[in-house]
Picture 1 (cartoon, rainbow, N blue to C red):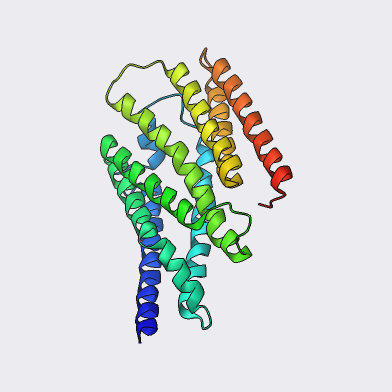
Picture 2 (picture 1 turned 90 degrees about the vertical axis):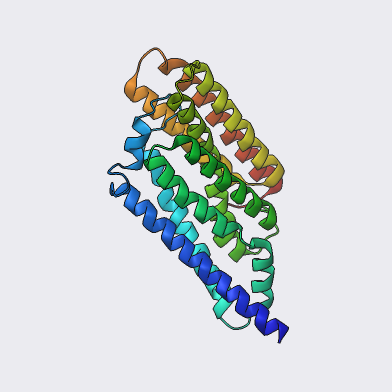
Length: 266
């Protein structure tokens, strides 16, 4: 009886997770169709100009993230509603708890706060989203080479990328907040330092957690910053492009070293 009740509870949780993801995707679609305060997410970003903003194409990574999360949703649906997966379902839900629901709530709230120019509130939502993804990373040991293939594909891959992107997005959100509050700061130096911080996090995630996806996302984001700076030009371009080239090389070398050292696959 207790097992049946537990399975029923886990199935409800799986349904809530799927619905939450669909809501987030829907809100994101509204945002990109200018249905939130009549602006796209990029147009709001343009109101707070700074040197850490990457080129527009960089944000296409959301397509990969959401496709990965849809795969995750299908995977947990299979565990919940197909026979023979009771033990796997229990192990999955005990680790996941409400962290995915919280991440979806934070993501959707961020979009509303951002589009209505509540930048401080959006930053708080971003921190909440980051915290929930960190917990998922810890609970599922994202990047651990000993995980089973389905878990690597449907959990490690989407959440490894998701955490990497939100880590960079948190820095970008903080930068936008400084601009919104009219706080004077040396933009070139700030951008270089933040790129260095992102690189340190990327290297840490590679060598300590085997999370190669995280570092790949950092490379993608920094490449976007380089392209954006080169397209605009100006005296700020050279030092940021130079720093971007260095950090991309460092991250790429870190990934290569770890792949060879651990003989892990991505």
